[in-house]
Length: 534
Image (tube, rainbow, N blue to C red; front, side, top):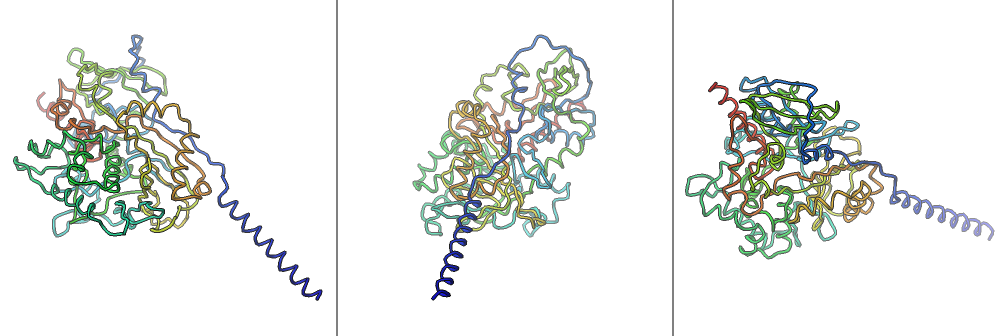
């Protein structure tokens, strides 16, 4: 009897200890941990000096150069890359930030690379001759397939699984929400609409939707799409499904930063029809842990000794046949005067009224989408019900665009740690109100908002995250609102004047690597042509 009581006592004690240990483990698994982090660039305070007219400019240094490139985003770096190819080596690139690349910047921490913006490049189609040539001359093409399309190294093609969507309480493969797992009538109708435009040729013999955008057809019947919103076009075409309309909206926010009701139908269809496609699907995108930072490293190679960062271009004027550039060295806190024979303006066009003194009312109408990018350092990848972790992970009806996994392509990633790059585009119509709402928010405000969003698919996310670094972009990308792309005014913005050439990709009306590369190339060609005339 006593042995029986003893055994029962031991059993109950052991059971209590086990329960306590399970509870303790659960507590530590889900308890809040101290999360570090900060808000990083861009240097908004110095940038806002442009709005304050200065009469006390006092240069403490003078520089002479044949070509001055203002801006070291992709279009500015592209300008330098092609000037070097054309044999023009006397040039200088200035940029306000302390690192180059614009929306393609990246960072590296503890051997983990991660992007601060653009994170992939779709395989370029046959119209994107320049991009294909750029990839080829940098050793990223292994050969050609039976159709003549480039073959890229497998390690640079996004590995499976590429995409997943958190929908109806679990993760599913792909980004189109499917209630039954199979395409429904509305999805099939959406595909039919897109397919009808995929290989459309205008009456001028040009493909309806191309990259670069300037190679697209000017057929008035096609350009009518620019006058209405993408959502209005889809609804008029019979799309009523909440899920399909959400998907179209997501794609609009992803590429243009605007909701589908405030970007043009032409831009919306261009997203789907301008790139290389194989039957119903697009081939895998090219991607790297650092995103398009991989490409910016290739672009800046010829110019590495010609780049001056932490330098604000304040004023550019033509004086006695030469261009005078007033600049401010942020680190040295001194004014610089630069004299150049020609200028490539690779800064966003909204700055032209401040730096160039332009008064064209069209510049006031340019709309730029604000963005937030956050990099979350995690001890291990968050999982969730359903489909396993993918490169791109999107949450249905979230304000965010979800996150990409920086280590997805890392063949050496035996360690569990990773970085999740989280994106949020403020797609509302009133971009000024969106920017104003961003300004007062602290790192703590953003961190809580991001984690609350991620708790939907990952209830234990706080136990996995050790650090959250955040970057806000008030004017991240040009927004192709209805009437902007083909209203007749956009094209005028790229017109050169007395050795001043324009290269920013907002001249294309869409903010993508391919257009930035093209704009830099075109500006460099104009410089080369001008030099030959002399």
